[in-house]
Image (tube, rainbow, N blue to C red):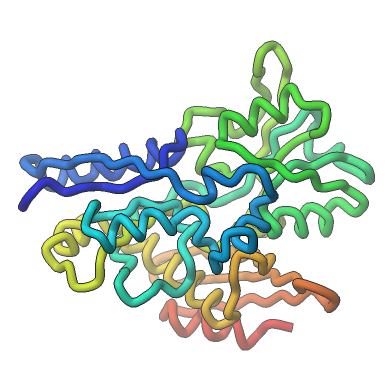
Length: 306
């Protein structure tokens, strides 16, 4: 095959995930030549407004703010594979594109990084996040907490947590911390400013669908690339994220819908739980389901919402 071109965002985390993909390709296909293509996306460029407002400002639906330019390059055959944080990938892809494989999933929990421990977050505490899911859960679990918008890559956000008086702490994905070499429990320092870090139990603070997974997107019908990317697919991760994404599809959910969903897979037994916050007025809905067929478990989870 010609050189396989991998498209990625340029953030530290995105580059790490591209490196992981390249390593997996090198192990499976030692003679394959791989070229990395760095692409700046709308979400990277538009840091002047809150993340949940970027799509409205740019006229992009769903979570396309972090994938639009990658898909443009993919369709134009400037790249062969787009490497994504799976939680950024829309639930339903347009016809020219296909989610082909996922790498083995990292831990899925969210993590608190703050000047104070999570246990001390109370009314008036300032919590930094750009995620509506994290915002609603923080307010649900810590009544009276004030959520402050937070933009930037992982190192930038952590620096803000340590040095910016606007934040008592921030919430990030454990996977990103782990991949970039930050501690995920205990304490560490940024410029001599101590920070507490604590992973939040996923059955208490529900993660995003697909959180912790790296998704590999190709052009539909490109079976030459598909045959290569198939070799990288991690089956257990695929079964879990397939069910989580199917649940979102049934909800017709976009990036402005605050939904948390967790899953566990023991052997063939899949268990799932979800927490769905209303976009406007209304009641919080929750559900759980289990079974051995991922599609059926996702549909049962949807039916069980109450």
